Length: 284
Ligand SMILES: NC(=O)c1ccc[n+]([C@@H]2O[C@H](COP(=O)([O-])OP(=O)(O)OC[C@H]3O[C@@H](n4cnc5c(N)ncnc54)[C@H](OP(=O)(O)O)[C@@H]3O)[C@@H](O)[C@H]2O)c1
Image: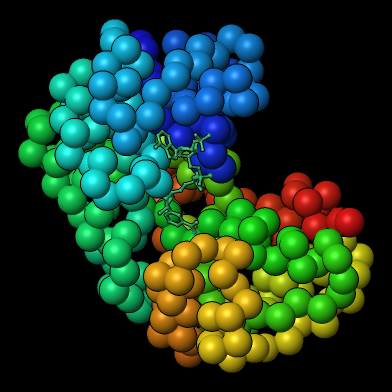
């Protein structure tokens, strides 16, 4: 694929996809709502576009072979945007979620799930070559969930500390995405991507404390306290979905797959690797 458009290229995963594509010498273009704020490598072309304003997508998609799609826009924008994306491209790699994995962490009802199912259906019925990436919990969630508390003190208040997840490093998701965008052989694939280890939220927080050399006091709070305190990490439906997912996940190890290693040829990064490389974000 010669010309690749990254939608979501200013975000956690998309930014890593863009830098890897640029380093490979691919012709990479980024769709962004505010190109001047994108802070991307100079050789990357950034084009103004907005998924919620479908007419803006045509210019971004002109001459494009493959699209990496991150969708965080409202559900109402899905149909017009997907029609245009599928019309212009031959290959779509969509950053989805493990919505088909039977583990209880991934099976709690939530509004995102229906939207992802709709996006996948539209891509599949369009006839475009597609690959769905289904990462579990991102290691980078720690930046919005825990860093604000850790930067200002040693106390971290968090619910369901015993809930295990297998946090995945955004660089590993991006490495898989680049393979799926640039190589043949991934059409129709659905890759469930996880980090290498099942770690409780308590263990993840302790890892961060170790890495930054501080002894954190990690305090369990109730789901009701969390509902009141965690509105900074997302709207109430997102907070409720997370609380339900963590509660349901307690008592069994997280779902761990070997997919990252099979595709990129090296093991996925550990949470310790991620925390070490992001330690500055947790220091005041
Ligand atoms: N966090 C997890 O644990 C987890 C696990 C599995 C799956 N996921 C899925 O991963 C996705 C999030 O990935 P991420 O963390 O890399 O994203 P992110 O950091 O939240 O970034 C979102 C990207 O989408 C762009 N964007 C938002 N609205 C847009 C619009 N209307 N038009 C064009 N671009 C728009 C943003 O661009 P701007 O610069 O314009 O804001 C930004 O580049 C979500 O779909 C989520 O459900 C997350």
